[in-house]
Picture 1 (cartoon, rainbow, N blue to C red):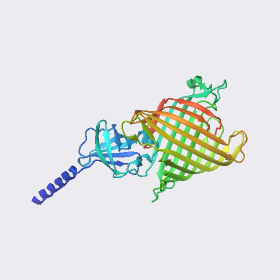
Picture 2 (picture 1 turned 90 degrees about the vertical axis):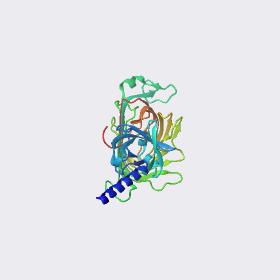
Picture 3 (picture 1 turned 90 degrees about the horizontal axis):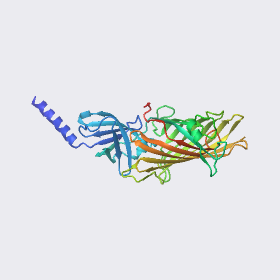
Picture 4 (picture 1 turned 180 degrees about the vertical axis):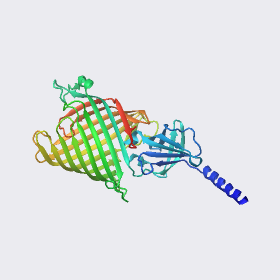
Length: 392
């Protein structure tokens, strides 16, 4: 009996010593669900509840999570949450926090220092966002076409009757076409992008694409590039309001340019986590179907995206896409090159939901329809976002 009491005393003493030496920890995902974050507080923390918003930051970056579960294992408080906000811009952004780093976990004005126990690891990604809202085009003539003259003005008549629907979905999983592999750099990925309107007017954008492929992610960085991805991809692009589609098989390359990081202006705290200037290149073979004929040949595409944050509430996104149509039997009426420039302003009304697009503007041409586009997208009527794969 005495030995038993001594044993129990030693156990409780060891537990007390461990609790006294406890250091709050942060784990970025469990290797299965990308974007899942775990925070372990020392002792019982009654100030954190499901639905709360926590900010995790260091001296350079920050990420916002929404609490989905609170547990009390072994007398400590373990919180599970999902990353939201600008961390959703790219799945590699959470990798900015490395194992052993010291970060601050804050809820409102209350904060604690914590150690990063597990950095972000490759895992399954399933996320989407969609929106619908009124669209307006810019014209400078009576026909309502996509004019470019100095007298151009917004066509308010179309604003009242034309709506634009946008959907972007992404799925990625480690392995080669779903098979397990010891090489964690191999990843299978698929995307679906819909960008169309309720009108048949070719002056409005009608660019819809689905892709599926395999890529090699995060090989050794160079002095000029980081987060390098290379691979092969099959693509199908289709205009919903015209009998036009493209089928491509391409080689792909994408990377970040760390020399041009995202900038935060007039911010009182650390920067939002966001990729620096990001670029993507592809080149391959295209089979193009139009209402009159079938075309084939090689096609190249390049895109660049950059983000600027201001006053902790606003995000300006800038992007450009350039396409080279080097088709063997391309008619003289089909342009050899396409260019589309985009700018968008987003507002962070709710940190738990992320940035909401308030306005966007496109100028150029893109997709299987070569008609020039110059149009506005004003506001969002509906929006949905998920990184965990389930509808919300």
